[in-house]
Length: 136
Image (tube, rainbow, N blue to C red):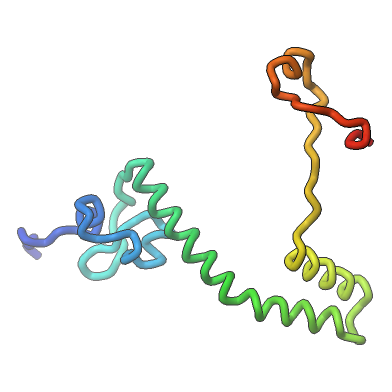
């Protein structure tokens, strides 16, 4: 089949800016590869710059987040039904309650302690302040 001289690949359209990242299909974002004119993936994935890869990855993550947000209410209902179910094991009911609380009010903040800190770290301001109440 002879090549169409007017055909511009989806990759080239993306590079040129005529194909926006929002217009790419999920599968293209996931694979970091562009479909051909027939809607197929052929050959090896094209070389993309780090910025282009990041752009595709960020869009893919946004789409996944939107899907999870759309299902969050249903997931909470499932946890609620397990938590309230008399037939469920106590451990399952407790776990469902913990998960609901974690999502509703958040997890408690954890403190990270660097036990390899030196006096220089303290002098340079890496360690700002240590309170006796904060140290177990």
